[in-house]
Image (cartoon, rainbow, N blue to C red):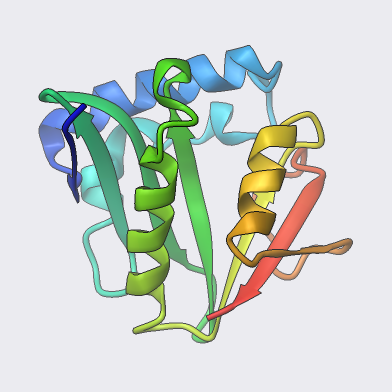
Length: 156
């Protein structure tokens, strides 16, 4: 298994949208208040193209299998955004590589990294905790993902 991590390109937009939507369906999150209704899902190469905002994709044998983004929330806080991998690749270290690259990048611009997820995404919660994120019980910043009921923050 040869995994390559690279910045998103326009050709990846629809593929990463498809991965995110399939994961949201898998976890019953295909509704308002989640990434499901985000109008920018198919436009990541346009959205994540300024200093402090970036999105990476993971490829296996030339096929996009996952991705992660860092997005500015304010001058001190970024958000780990749209981190999803296809089911077949989970548990093989791909997400670990993605989060390491994203957090290393974020350290150059921010003091803290925030994220929101869902209560039923147990594996994701364990993964975030393993990478030093601490659960918080109130939103640190306001996002449009009002259905996300679990929040984490990490000092960078």
